[in-house]
Length: 176
Image 1 (cartoon, rainbow, N blue to C red):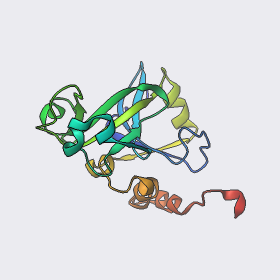
Image 2: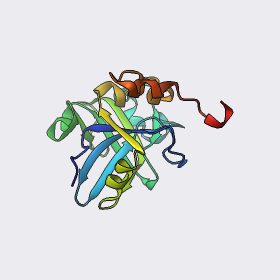
Image 3: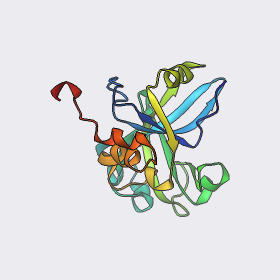
Image 4: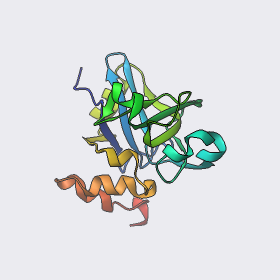
């Protein structure tokens, strides 16, 4: 099996046209022989945290809304953040899973995702072999960015290779 992508970002190739993943940035939570799970970081919704989970409002990073974490189990909520129980099993630096049924008091920079991105055994490895995704290092600020709409370009732009040029790929190459 190829190396695990846990704690790293999958950045959708400009050629990836699946509407669930077009121009997405996915933080990988797990990746092993049994499959992979990640959260799409740049799909905010119009649902305010204050409407969905009011007691988490103060601990949430702006913009304080729910995010679409992926197409799998859209009725499930997953929280990521700093502090409290998140430090027990960090995914990225000190950022880890947050128990949304617990108290928000010890947490900060929390994001709440509806659903997740999931791959069966070997599925993600096949997509990586086809160059559907670029695997790059993540920083904590990627999860709590205040500008999720520009995250895809921002992550590509900071790369120190020719990959950074992909940040300038047009939204629709056929219009070029």
